[in-house]
Amino acid sequence: MASVERDMDKARSGGQTAAALSDHELAAAAAGGDEAAFGELMDRYRNPITNFLYRFLNDYEEAVDLAQETFVRLYFALDRYHAGYAFSTYLYRIASNLAISELRKRKRRRLFSLTGLFTDDASDTAEYQPADGRRLQDASFDDDQRSAAIAKAIATLPEKYRVPIILRDIEEMSYDEISQVLEIELGTTKSRINRARGMLREKLDKEILGLK
Amino acid sequence: MTNELEELNAEDRHVAEALGAMPRAAAPTDFNHKVRGRIAARKQPSGSGWRIFVPAFAAVFLVALGAVLYLGVLSSADVTDVPPIAEASTPAPASNRVPEPSVQLPEPTEVASTVNEDTPAPNDLVTERVASPQRRPERRPQTPAQINDGGSVDRAGSPVTSNPDRPVNSNVSVPDMRPPGFEGGGQVDSSEVLSLMGLKGNFQADGFLVSNAEASGAAARAGVRVGDVVESLDGKKIEPETRFASGSEIRTISVKRNGESLTLRINR
Image (cartoon, rainbow over all chains, first blue to last red; front, side):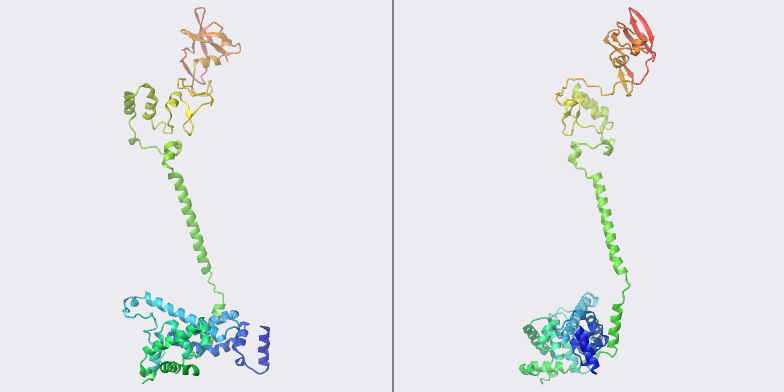
């Protein structure tokens, strides 16, 4: 910690701002109570985390709320963070866990709601995904028909396929990073991503995918 | 990413490109401010002491409720949970027993007459016991020998005697268990009264023939001599069966001496 503080002082004395520090250095400084370092971490990752959660939940307001909660959890867990992982991996893990918990809460609410009792889902043999029927909350991000169709198709994927395909094809993370976020084997990660692509291919029209 | 796309087939590559081309959602401008607000709110002490006290109060209440129920079960078990076998073999003391309703008991006269018709005299005591269950409900069942002997039984039903070596004799007369003398209450017979007055002798047809009179005894001081025949005490004729109330004060003693009746005053 002392060396990190020296680095911070050195960076500041050399005219460098917090933006020039690595994620690890910022996380260490934030763990020591440096609010500016924590602010810099939020500036770096608030948009990617919000976008990831938005694509996962297909609900912008919910995505922003969970993104804020992600950083709150990060703030109180910084002392448990260690540099063995990439900082982004650590942050996405928090976000994905929150998102999966939120999805399961939705499922419970839906199951116990009266409207859910009388809907005819008997023909739907796929894993139940509460986000299916939800309208996009903020049309400004998916105002064109193609993006809306893809977003809806992603929302139909089971969570174990949805998280890796978003991290891979939207957030452009490597397979290794995704394996660390999900804490699964590399082969399992690749398999799930390929399976998710196949499911999306079946759900989307060829015209939307530009195959015609 | 580019290398990986090259490895994909055409369809999967189109899917990946379509996903990558989707517009990105951006966080609102007040994102950092709201995060700091949440952090500040969680740093403050909650001030919700009830979150601690409510479970503690619930725990105390449950413990108290359990204790009350447990004690209630124990107290009810003391009153009602008497094994039927134990009750039949060794009846509980009279103070703890609930008297049976009188309507369920046979009439004493009817039972007595029935028993007397069916059984001869040796079962009279049984008749008495059956005929008056309410008067002595705590009496333990006895063996026929004990009934005649008048002794008691221990918990195992064996006869209890003052001398364990002495066999139980059913022909021995029933001893009087009342305390001797004038001071114990109840009644005493005439031989004990005369003995207490310092007289020894034998009963005969006309009274008690004095064979020895203690000089310090009340009778000798009144003038009773050896050879006198005590006829009555306070006018009550002396016979072996004559009984006097214990604690009563004898004032006169009538004797026959040389064919002459004398009434002597007892001075104390």
